[in-house]
View 1 (cartoon, rainbow, N blue to C red):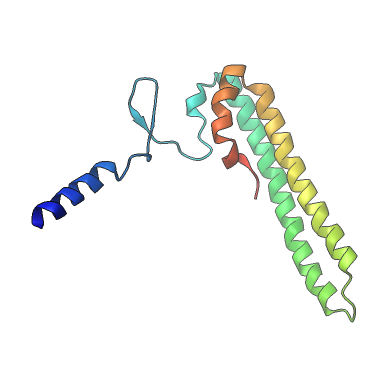
View 2 (view 1 turned 60 degrees about the vertical axis):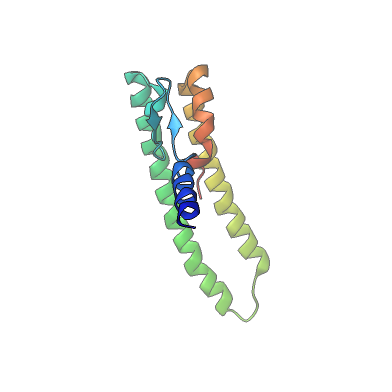
Length: 133
């Protein structure tokens, strides 16, 4: 019985981190950090352009966040009224979602224009992490 348990334990340890790592071109394990672009081997010009693009996007998202907080405060005012204005609620929510989508699209369009075709193929594997919540 001990031998069976030991064999099961050893076999489970062998496969416990099977998919935890990706392997780079040299066959070494590599771990990807979110929003990390080192795997793209950007030129100094590309790095500068991406930094500028990210700073601009960050500022836009910060402004959107402030408007979202203001909307949440105005929703409480909408809810305090005698009749709930469903249409006003929908319009305000749609406007914010549309702005968030526009910011995300602008960012991805900018990144697309900066990267080479080879870099884009690598970038597409991590596209999901660049979505704005």
